[in-house]
Length: 258
Image (cartoon, rainbow, N blue to C red):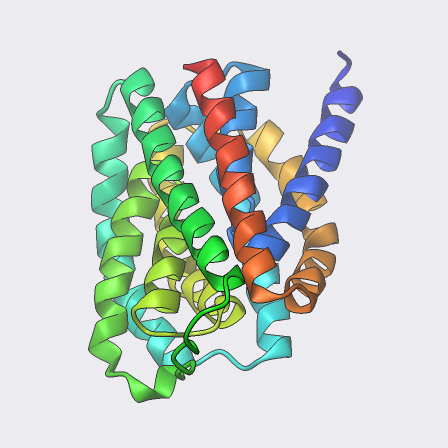
């Protein structure tokens, strides 16, 4: 394929992944990684590093759109971001020293666990039963709790390249009782500094293909606003079910490659 064909394909793929990231609050990286491995035959580390190039501007755009819908508590996000920076670096060093196939299989297991959780949550939300506890706001909690979440999200984001927000969101929705969209917005804001750190770590080890990542990034930012708009229009149980189904598709793609 000619170079311009590759660029156009990356733009189109980035746009679709950016849309999915806007809907699900994951920056699209979880979907980009298996596609890069499956279609371009990248090792897991290279796929994760390249996906980070695409993810960073998409995350920034997604957070901006979420903040326009409902203001994000920047103090809570900063507490999470501060701890995520250190642990993202630690996680990245762990990932760069692991066998690529083992890392891919570990990643698939991580995605499967999150998908099962969201399937359970969407099914439970759709059933009639006793009234659910009311949602809570970020301001009700001490900022130290968000620093702890940032630690967990940073470690996951460093090891898997992306995914820190995916791990943080279920904690924020179940333990802290935040709304789904509110949790997605806060989690993504927390991981922004860690995403810079992870990209630097992967790129420093030659595990980031900028020729692929940059056009994917350019494509992703075009459809992110429409994804965020759809996220706010969907009922929460349906959003969780969509999230779970997307993660199951990702896991299948990973296992095909493995």
